Image (cartoon, rainbow, N blue to C red; front, top):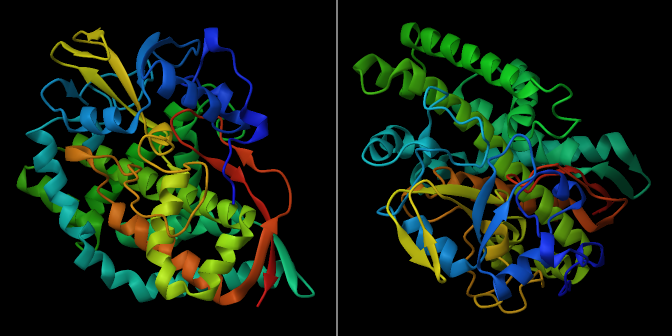
Length: 417
């Protein structure tokens, strides 16, 4: 089993550690730098040499600190931005990640009933069917004898959560491609593949906002049994402004796609790279699927960080945090913290305990966490039914983003059962 930091990520400059700007992530996460920070500077002030980001931020890398700051609503808030982009404006799109209580509590309740475990379980059979059909299609189009080599991202990871969120929102499946394009552009506008022009992100946000407004207008006239209607009714009642509706819809489309997409990608990459874990899962999926989903989610940490802004002065690790200071909560680092996880660089599908913090903690715990778990579980369950063995078939390519722990391409060879 993988139990060490990958060789390609072992070199870094201690005097110029950079875990916040985007370009260093084009070759994968800087795990060695995270580890050094956890051991030597658990609250590190970093200057950021990236034109689209703020000039500097504190970096919290230990599990305990990430969890404690997440739950400390007295000293830390989200209103001034949930990431470290330097273009945050209070007049921009407003969504759950950009508001504090009591507004956050009110907005969260508007959709939270759609994401409870009981509500999410309604989709179990459908998601298993959807995952199975996507796997069957990918294998059929790439089969060569008893194997098929596919890009997991293109054929499975992207398609599954995007189709799921489109169905949940109630938008036409024909809009799938442009929603995916918008999502890619908004997440990383430095990656030349996702944002070919400097204004691609702004254009994507504008087009998504116009799309959301059309959706609100349609659902106010033609209500349906979908999440878009649930939110449109809040606009009608005056509990949600049209501006807030737009932000809510954009967040659901982007977050509903990106998190599960990268969870599945990293999960399959880990299973392909650890054949003993794939064999264990295949031999007894009923026993291991739930714990495998938790380990996949720890391993993937699909959102690399969220930022907080200091509201009230406080002190941590001898550092004075003053109002206005930024703090990046590094979930990916927290999920490899040796103080919490035994052999954290070992992928172990029956890891117990597994207090992974990929979905955040406290008031801003991920609204769609139960849905993400269900989708990840369905994909793994259907893959096990159809595949005897899987292995890497080329180099993994990563998204140029410190915010999203993203995978762009994952060539994998599947031996068909």
